[in-house]
Structure formats: C-alpha cells, structure tokens
Length: 266
Length: 285
Image (cartoon, rainbow over all chains, first blue to last red; front, side, top):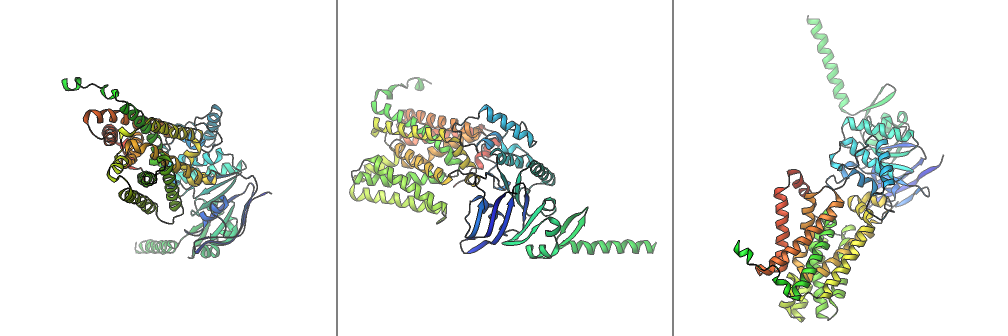
C-alpha cells in the first residue's frame, strides 16, 4: 500500500526544548490513525510537521509527491464572530478562481458536499448559527472540498458534547469507509480513540503504535500519561479509567457492605 | 429652519481647491473604508494608527531633503509597515510593542527633522491635520492610482485574502502564501495612508480606517457585503464632512471623523443587541 506520510526519526524543537523526539511513523493510503497523548505531548506539533507548518529539527517528514492535505483545525481556534457564511468557508479554499463570486458549478458541488455530510441547505447560514456538530462538519467539508488525499484533524471532539462526539465519529468512519485517509489527534480515549483501527501513543516520542487492544493497555498508558490508568473491557472494547476508578471501587464496596448489613439487621 | 434654507449648499463649489479636496476626500474615504475591513477583522487597528504616524516621519524627511513627497514618505511607510509585520510575526517583540517602538520613533524623527531644518509649525500642522487648500489634482490622481491598485488586488485575489484573514494557519497548510499576503496588505495600507494623509491628516487616518468598517460590521454578517458597505460609509462621511466643514468653518479632517463617528453611534443605537455584540467581539491588535 502506498505510504502517504513518512516520519523517520523526526525531532522538532521550539527554541531550546524538544516537542518531538525521534518519532518514526508511517501512514499508508486508506488508513485511519489516532494520535493520543497528554497535553504537551507533541500531538499537534506532529500534525503541523506533516503539514509543513513547522520544520523537522532532526530526521525527516516526507509527504508523497502531489499529496493534497485537508486540515481541520480545533474548533476553539476558529473565530466564530468573523462575518462569513458556510458557503464562503468552503469556497475560500478554491483560490485558483480569482473572481469573488461563487460559480454555478461550485454551488452545485458545494450542495452535494454539504448534503453528503448531513448539513445540506446550510450554505447561506452564518457559521455561528450552527450547532456544535454542524460547525465541526463545516470544517470537515471545507477540508474535503479541496479533494484531499489525506485528512488531518486536530482534536475534532475537543470541547463538544457527547452527541456531537458521536456525530463526528460516525462521520469520520463514513469517510474512512469511502476510502479517505485520516489522521487525527485526540485526548478522548474512550469516546474516540478506542473506536479507531490504529493508535499512536505519543509523549514526545512514540510509546506504542498499533490497534487499541495493543496500545490501550496499562503499561503503555502509564508510560504515555505518566500515571497509572486502569483498563476494563466492555463488549470487546477497552475502557480506560483514571485514578478515580479506585475511589469509585471503594465507594461501590462500601455501598455493597452497607446493603448487606441492612439485610442482616432485618 | 430659515437658517438652514439660507445656507447655499453649492457655495463651496465656487472654489477650485474645494472641488479638488472634495473629490480627494470622497475617494480617500472609500479607499480607507474598503481596506479598513481587513484592518478591523485582522485586529490590525493599532497597526493602522501606528503606520500613519510612521509615514509622518517619511513625509518630514522628504520635505527636509527636498525629495518628492510620495517617493520619500512612500518608501519610509512601506519599510515601516513591512518591518512591523516581520517583527510581530517572528515574535522578536510583541506586536503592540513593535508597532509602538517603530512608529513613535519614526514620528519623533519627523518632528525633530522639521524642528531642526524645516518650516516646523506650518509643515507639521499640514501633515498632522490635513489641508484641503493644499490638495492638487496630482493628489487626486495619486489616490485614484492607489485606489485602483487596491481594488484590483482585492477583487482578483479575493479568496486568498479572505482565507489568509479568516484562517491563516489552514491557509498556510493549503499552500497559500500568507506571509506575502500580509506584506501586500501592509504595502497597500502604507500606500493608502500616504496618498490620503494630505487630505485627512496623519492623526485622523486611523479613525477612517476603523470607524466605517466597524459600522459596517454591525450592519451585516457577510464579509462580501462589508466590503461594499464600509467604503460607502467612508465616502459618505467624507462627502458630508467636507461640506459641513466649509459651512461650520471647522477642520475638514476633524469634521469627517466626527460625521463617521456620528454614523457609528446612530447604527450602534438603532442596531439590535446581536448587531452590537459583533463589534464587541472585534480584536484590538
């Protein structure tokens, strides 16, 4: 399978400190990859290195010649007060057309794109008037409107509610099912990461790379997050619990004891 | 009422200098209005303010060295604008500190030069507050040339400028030359300040860059409509301001800004809460 992104022993430094060290990761065409790790682990830096926005200090980042990248930024970074409609957000990427007006062909293509992402008919709405899920879809649509070979998403479920998270997850699985190559960063281990076919656990360096069953395990997670995390299995999928799990266990045991004591006292 | 009727509205047009000033001011208002949309939405209001002061240094230097005003002040302004942009982008200093240092130093150099070598008071006042009397058809032609270049650039590269203004990070990833677009914006801004400063004056140009665009922002939620409304408000303020200044015997630049501020206030008062919130969310830098 064609390799679209090849990071070989990549290090990226901001001034004196390294955000990434010796990262080796390849993304093949058609893959769906999640990059997980704590805040400051270099997830966004890795995405930015792939886009060419930051240069590798050591090693290399190679993107296959002619690869078109579609980038979806964090929704928190978007200026929602900017006077712009959904249609303008999509067509601004088509900068080869010099004239400001939207052509009939563009309008038709845009309608199809929005329809396929479940936000048909919203092209004349201001971006602030949309729901969280619709807003995220608009920026996925913008990235897709440039006919990308690979879609990069930075924390696509950050700051969104549970329903929106489900919508985004379904949307990305649909796109992947249609052949899209997707790389995303996330800190949402249970809601998003555990549903992906491949995860790269990152903490400045790659701690583990593989399917959730092999990466969402206590040993890897402790090295990635620097704290012990528990993993349960539910319906064949790993569920990661943080240290509060122990407290909840104590509560559960105490409640169980109390119930038994009441039964005995009766 | 009888006082209003007794005013001869066409009286100022008997004077050639007023006609030239009127045409120059109206064109300048439209030009500042359209560029102001980018200035306001990019949070560059302070840069516009600073650049107008920086160009003053160039104007003084060209007067002292007997160099053509447009050449001397133009080079000075463009260099200042690009310098501010580079300092801010490379984070050598914070953007506000970079603007403060470059532009106030340039402004101070202008005053010192005119004090030492020039006809200080007359020259300083003319550049600071503008002078309708001093507007020539050459000045009108200069505004027309810069205005045509700005309009052509913004129309032909509409989507690139919009992309770089709305989302510079993704625009860079998508292959847009965002740094070049920023330099072009600075050059257009410097050019606009250069050709309009003799009409409106250095101190008031930044107001004409900000007020019409901020007023337009309250009136629409569409970027393309803002690009139409802001120049109309800018040109209208200048037209009304120029006429009012003749009849009220006040400074043309000051009257123009007061008229545009009145337009802003009226829209602010009569616009709904949602419209008002749009200007509340505009950035400062």
